[in-house]
Length: 371
Ligand SMILES: C[S@@+](CC[C@H](N)C(=O)[O-])C[C@H]1O[C@@H](n2cnc3c(N)ncnc32)[C@H](O)[C@@H]1O
Image 1 (cartoon, rainbow, N blue to C red):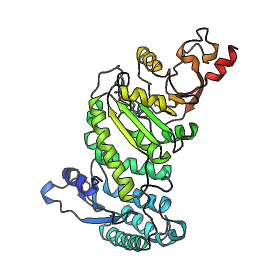
Image 2 (cartoon, rainbow, N blue to C red; image 1 turned 120 degrees about the vertical axis):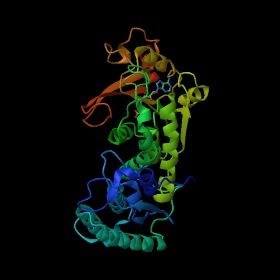
Image 3 (cartoon, rainbow, N blue to C red; image 1 turned 135 degrees about the vertical axis):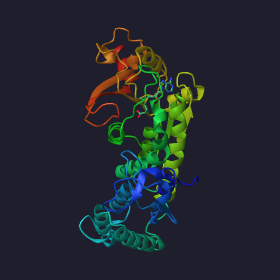
Image 4 (cartoon, helix red, strand yellow; image 1 turned 180 degrees about the horizontal axis):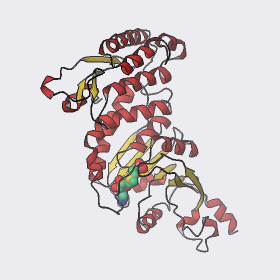
């Protein structure tokens, strides 16, 4: 198992953007003068604890270790600690969680150190009682909220430091980069009813965000294929960080994840995987008509009942269902399609909502029609 990239390492790699944690520290300290106050944070995993530097972040969009502690402790209490032990951690009004949050709001280093020491003591006690039985190879999947948090942590440590690489692409090409957000992926998971015995494929998987989320929430076999160098390189880094965190820090299982740096039109292995897929996702929002047509040709051998979810329909816009097609031998006539809507703040390239399409392979209906 790869070691995780710690919050402390991230801060150390960019000391110039941090200042001591105190009410009046607004500007970054000169790198040489910043002495780091370091504390461990206990996670549910056995012997899992991450080192944090207790410093304020002075630049927007930079990794903020204090915000990460706030979100992580809250998430662990809400989604990881079994109900009967939650009381000892308190909530937003009382107890340890409240002390951590109040110290963060007051920017009091001393209070935060005391509150985190209490957190760690309590977590170590629970771990000694085997409250978080290791379940990285089996057991229930992590909740959407936990997976979403771990994705944020993995992204901030593996992708964010080099996220400028994602802006390197030819404008108005098929390689324009953009991402669907966690809430949208969660909707897709519900709509397509993805199950542990399913095979999921993301065609054009970017940094692997969709694949990682589906693998962790659904425990199924997942594949992502990405042709562009930079997203593919960051996807490999993010996958390592995500899997290590899920299993070592949170002791949670994950489905099998295969990410390939290759062209989905050319790749022979992917051609075979697509034939076994239950759910395929294609974020084809920026793909041109020729690429969409070539992707459609890949769907000829899809399994009966397989589902293809995309942001642009694979059926011509003037024909709302494939059934009404006069060219009934065209590949699209294997599908029924339904239009759906996503709300605001679901995709990275715009705030507004938009359409997406769920195509289901249903050859039986087609056969009936021609009896
Ligand atoms: C808009 S991004 C989607 C990333 C991710 N699936 C998501 O929705 O968050 C589309 C990706 O498809 C990739 N792509 C385009 N043509 C491809 C091809 N022929 N084979 C593999 N990937 C391709 C692009 O490089 C781009 O990274």
